[in-house]
Image 1: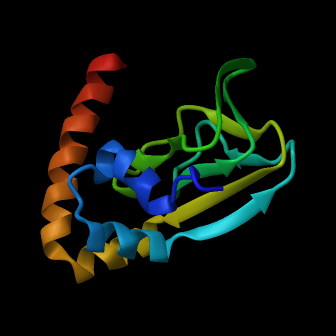
Image 2 (image 1 turned 30 degrees about the vertical axis):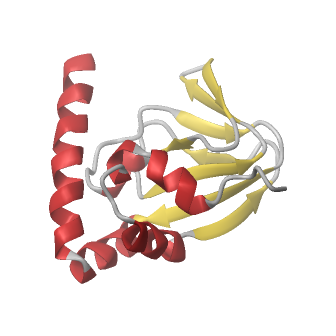
Length: 139
């Protein structure tokens, strides 16, 4: 598909990575793992500590709060970015609505990235601080 976005393109849309340059985005992409999950697979569980950031490449997921579906996310959408830097419990459960292909970046891989590129750490920390303030204001 000529119009299909690359993982690098999708990462550039994520607020956490919006100030990253192309070499940094490529490094992040290299650290990510592509996984396939069947419909019904729980990808994250509300209340549990978050350990990874996920981008949906193909298929759809449902975002559930308690027993209610609060959103459906599809290709190019993401969740869990806060989990990379903050040990907050997940605010929702995410379940594959259809078979999905996802890209996953876990906290340990992300930590190695920040150790390798300290300048990137400063950029991301500034963005993250702003995002956490917004979350605290919402909650």
